[in-house]
Amino acid sequence: MKTFYQKLLIRKGSKKALIAVAHKQIIAAYHILKNKEVYKEPIKQIEAINQKKKQRDIQKSVAQLMNLGFSVRLTPTA
Image (cartoon, rainbow, N blue to C red):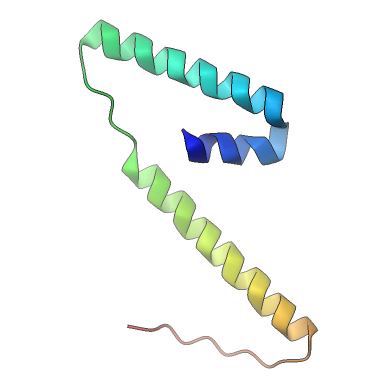
C-alpha cells in the first residue's frame, strides 16, 4: 500500500491519495472477509515499481553528470 500511496501522492496530492488508499483497503478487507482468505501483498507489482524507479534514478544521475560536463559510460556489475 505504501508504494500505491507514494505513486498517487505525486499525481493527485495528499488528501486524494489517502482516500484512494483507504478505499483500496476497504475493498481488500471486504474480499478477505467474504472469501475467508489471508491478505498477500502483490510482490510482482512492487518489484516492477522498484525497477522503474531504479531506471529513472539512473537516467537522472547520468543526465546530471552530463550537464556538469562528464562523459558517462555505464557498465553493469555482477
